[in-house]
Image (tube, rainbow, N blue to C red; front, side):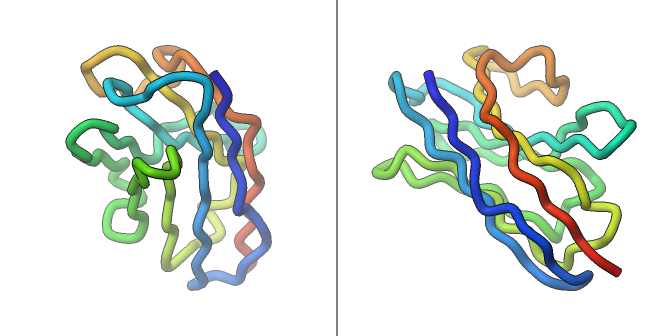
Length: 123
C-alpha cells in the first residue's frame, strides 16, 4: 500500500490550499482515509477523515467549516481543501488509511501513512 501526499506550500493567512493523497496498492473501498497534521514540538493530531465507501466525513473542531475532505473514486485520490487558513494551521500534513470500520481520531490506529507535505501559513 502506498499513499502519496502532495499540495503543500506557503500561503498567507486567509488563503487556500488543496492537498491530495494518491492511494495505490489495494482496493480501499472499506477503508477510512484520514488527514493528520503535526506542528513542531506537538503531537500528531486529527484533522479530517472520510469513509471511502459512502463518503461520510468527520472533522476536528478546529477546522470545521474551513476544511473539506473529499475523494475521487476513479482516481483513488483523497483531497483536503483548506480555506481561510490561519498561522496555527502550519504543520506537516499526513494522509493515512485505516482498515477498521469505526472512524478513529487517534493516529496510532491508522495502518498506512503517506510521507507528509508541509503547509506554512504566514501572518
